[in-house]
Amino acid sequence: MTNNGQFREGVKDALPVVLGYLPVGVAFGLLARNAGLTPSEVGLMSLLVYAGASQFLAIEMIFKGMTWLPVVLATFFINLRHILMSSNLSLYFKNTRLPLLGFLSAQLTDESFAVAISNLPKLKNNPPYLFGLQITSHLAWVIGSIGGALFGPLIKISEYGLPFAFPSLFICLLVFQLKSVHHFGIMVVAGASSLFFKWALQGNWYILLAALLAGGMGVVVEIVNGKQKAGGERQKAQGSKQKP
Amino acid sequence: MREEMLAIIFGMAVVTFLPRFLPMAFLTRWVIPERIRVGLGYIPTAILSAIVFPMLFFNEGGKVVIQSHHLLSAVSVFIFSWKVKRLWASVILGMLVYWGLGFIM
Image (cartoon, rainbow over all chains, first blue to last red; front, side):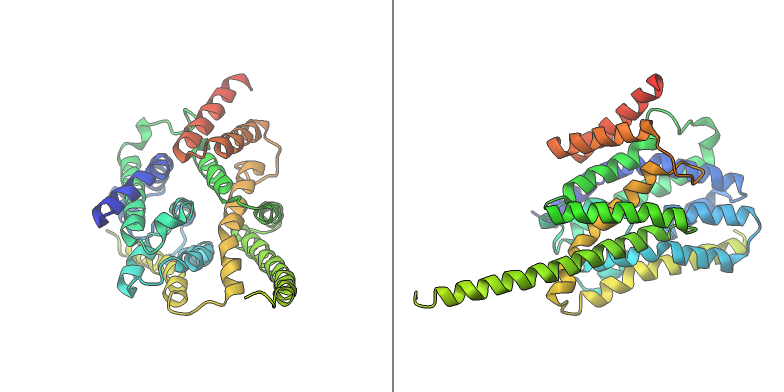
């Protein structure tokens, strides 16, 4: 497929994300306006920061009169979870030049990441596809926020099942990942530990901690399995030495 | 635009960019040992689970609750996407079930 075709494919795959980002963006714009931001500040923040959870937290903090340092630090810690996603994406963009990687990684979000990794053959070494997927999602976020800042008071965002758009998106993408019994095990460990960490700790550390714990267990299981398999294959190889 | 707000926005932009960019920048230029690579392959499942489960079992006030409304919708989406394997359709179905249950429950 041409670059243009790949780009369009990405735009198409972004539509479920757009469905979620528009209403949440509107909610953000509305709340940010209430917290005293102007529509242009709302738009600039959504354009440059593009991180839902930390933007909501930031306007909450700004509203309470916090200065820039605590807001920026909170944002930094909330977004540390992207380290794992960025590490994972690095597997599929070995041949991409650094400036382009910089551009692509700036638009990484939980949602577009989840969609991107749902079809690896499509994603692999395919910057136009990822760009199409991410720029469309990003635009929806910016347009939603500005729309919310301008017209928010006229729209009801709690209607028509919209609050369940993101849970549905994530559940479906999780189902796509469940390719083996190991993946089910990872799901159970990550799910249970995320509930525990969220209950026990402040903020959204639970995603990073639970994912590290479950991913770490996955590596251990894989190493143990690999050793068993390697042992088995060595025996097999010895048994069939006579054959050419 | 106010200077303080610009400082906040640019500061946030920088600190959100770093964890998005640095791992990709370094790991794509480094040959990753097989075991770590396999572990990284489990990360999507782990992250998605760590996002989904708290969404279902915590309410907006941050309290642990059994919300049958959420759980029934979630199970429907799970089964539907397992069978149908269509992202779009699953999101629409989830919203419809959630919306519909709102009238019953």
